[in-house]
Image (cartoon, rainbow, N blue to C red):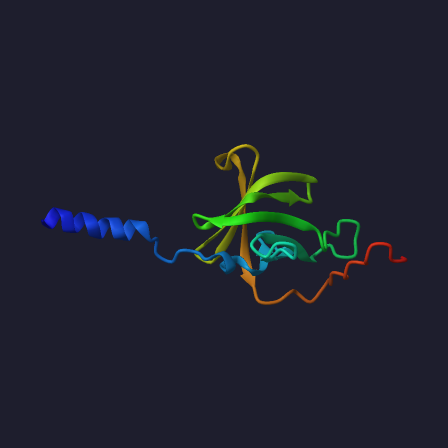
Length: 147
C-alpha cells in the first residue's frame, strides 16, 4: 500500500513542472546579451496565437547597420513550455533558421538551429521595462511613401 501511495505522489509531482511557463510570459521587451538591441515579443497581427519578434531598438539606429523594425522571428505554437514551429532570422548573416523560444529563470532563450534543435545556438535575452533613450529607431515608412 505504501509503495502505491509513494508512486502516485511521485507521478503527480513529475506531471506538473513547478513554475511552468505560460505562452504570454515571453511577451514584452528583451535586451540581447551583447546589449546592442532590444527585441519585442508579442502576438502576431495576422494570427494572435502565434508569436512575432521584432527589433524595436538598435544601438546602430540611423546607420547602415540599422536593424530597426526587422522581424527576427515567428513561432506558430506554444507546447511543452516552449514556442515552436517557426523561424528566426539573424540580421548579422542574413539567414533564416528553425527556432524555439523558452523562458527559464527569468531569462529568455531563443534557440536557432538547422535540422535538429540540439545542434543549434542559443541567444540569451534579459527583460527590460523600457527602451534605452538613444539612439531612437525611426518609425517605418509605409510602402510607397516618398523619401
